[in-house]
Image (cartoon, rainbow, N blue to C red; front, top):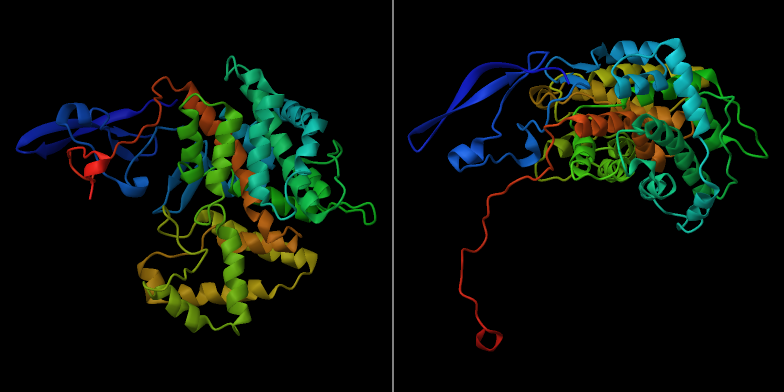
Length: 433
């Protein structure tokens, strides 16, 4: 891990007594107050709901500057990676810390091809989910089950981590495609080593005995870009969950399954599905923008303008800009006319000229246009969060690996301030009124 530099000290005064804590600085100038000895020195803890101001770790993987709209994986700008790389190159970068050479990439591809198939016994599990089962629940269960079939990480979790990472990255697309096929009642399509990572997934999703699927390079390129944009994003809810669960010594499969469950939430990975639902609602209501903008501004109205704003970014999400351009490109190539795209563009234009949204830095984020791309290439809305998980998996694995390799890692155990009843005398049941 890159060495942190210690700068000035922060001074805290409690009840007239002064305490000092070191300020540490990262390689990009971000600063944090090291309070690991706060409780020991002062008897106090910090309260920070949602961890808005709390750094849970130091990491070499992803740099995010929300004020300037910067996102980098291992030092590389997201714009360059999305434009010039394959998804599996970016996965390798996140796992190993450097972009692969041609030989390293071929070796990694070989591992992905080797591990693409599921154990045949696992196929029977799909038969026991109800037809309307959520693809995310299926994904979580199946990933967790992988540990029973491939337990080689049990003795030394880091010894075989590259092989296990390749197995997970390869098999998760097979699980995702099979879950879709089962929900449709269609026969399964097995992976093919003749196709690329993204091409393979698309073929498993959409090929049919009665209607063979043609893997179009433009669709592969669009999906490749989407997965890269979602590959990691610092300490978000699901990534923090993977680290938290992993800090208890839990195996990689179970930690990833926990991350999948965290991603499932509508405030996290389910946001792109919420955008499509919102756009469909507005469209069905004669595109009454004024009505829904007013609802979004009303603090007593539960309606939210999905796809706008971000917990970290205070300007345009750099991924949102890339994905907006990709959306136009793929719709043009496929000659798809989607009224929701027109509606989304109008909504964006109106919102960004509205003082309410400008003042609150509510710009379109990565979720705003991604669902429209998925619709265009045939992926149903209930699979959108699964697609997010496919992209985020390399980042989760890299974060888990970094956490396990860090000798300063301790089991995650937040504190609390108790606000319940003070100590009271126990009353026998016969005396209670």
